[in-house]
Length: 609
Image 1 (cartoon, rainbow, N blue to C red):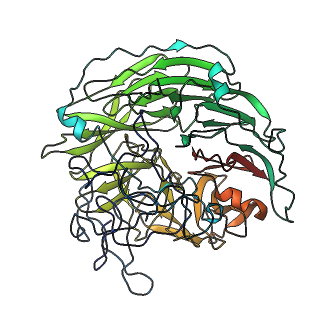
Image 2: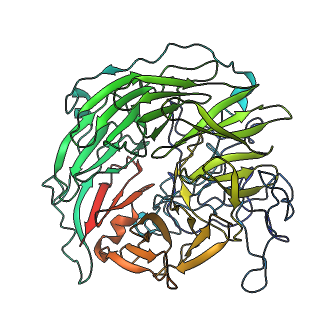
Image 3: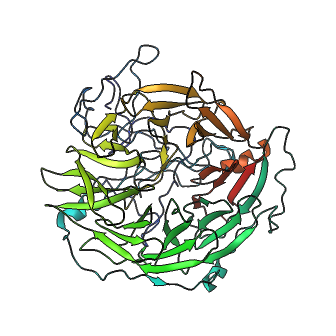
């Protein structure tokens, strides 16, 4: 989609645009987490450096005029050669405001100051309250990060110009690790605790619960973290356990009662990546740094059984060819395959045994794999081809997860970049065009043929985390997809919004439903023929979990869970939060620890009736 005529360019590639910061919403950490030993807050450059595209504005930036000129005219070709839809008038005859290349307008996170336009740029110091309100009173920053946050594709720009193809580097070899429940290093980080789990946090969060409100089933305080903060990636819910990674440990609690299920498992260095999904048999893999030095790499892999806490195989990720390092890695699960993505290549392992399966390296004239996305039985690879030449473009491929064999290839038109995948099965991708400052959502058939593009003129606001050293194709939440329909939340400006159901057959809106409260609502999952969504908490009410029927003439939201008013402030404070709805319980956890010693931040909470 292009920008509507007579409208200023919206937030996206390049300099921020001239708009005031947007209201609260869920979003990524306000200072991007340091990767591979890089300083957490690099000094601001006098001007954005030349070369690869800079990370783009995330939630909460003041928008400034962009450097790329006017947006493309309506009807301009999209990434697959099909004309984009002309803009439609809004409800009062005015053109509807369109998102920039990354979709949603920037939003601030839970009680934190707006992000900086690019790492190191001048801006409000992280942690400052917004609008003069206490941090705990500001709008929550849930998980569903904006399909739009900072994006710096190193492998697809600078590195691909000079890097070799099938260069060396020792092959990674997996080895069985010890089966201990907790390493000696874990003692440096106190374990999480909680009220009714019998820990050292005695407060009763149900004391003031009102009639009709859900219970806080359990909660856990976060472990100590350095003053600069620490990552707390992932949240995995099984039938018995709720598992969470934080800083240098992985914790496991009873899903229903919050009692310690196993561990915690400790690591000698900080956790830097984790699989977003578990395998069919309940296995995950976390990556941690190989040292604490300035040249540290995120190259240590550890498999963990979610049910028992047993530590399985361990492996070290080898560097690839020149400029293809494991400074940062991307972990993707597809069936029994774990794909470990570097900046220009990937290595696949059997997630059960740790056996190396294959490598994905440079192919063709100059195509470098830069990102992966996985589903139950599908593995998608995005490659950057011909960077620095007149034929620069992206390519999407589906791989056989077990062998790496290419099933199909879909070239993307020059100037367009595959930034996110909203779904792998069916495949729905979010693309951006830097030069034209436009975005596009395209869908594909099973055999990789173009199916449709979204034709709804709306400012959508799924929210995604940072993607600094890799694209992180599956870094978005607040969007759901089933076999025939894409469900997207509209941008709410911190008030009631809508979820729009969009047909994958023709890209047109099928129906839309408004949030039942004066707060934003976003999809979590499709379950039992209904869409389950989360409504953010307000100053005087807790969040809600609602269900929306997918068929019939009425799509009214029905409340499944009303979180207590007395814990709304706590619910608002989960930094870069992650949410899930499983077995009638709502879980929320922090995606990053602030490291603030003045407050005892929560790591995770569970609600239920």
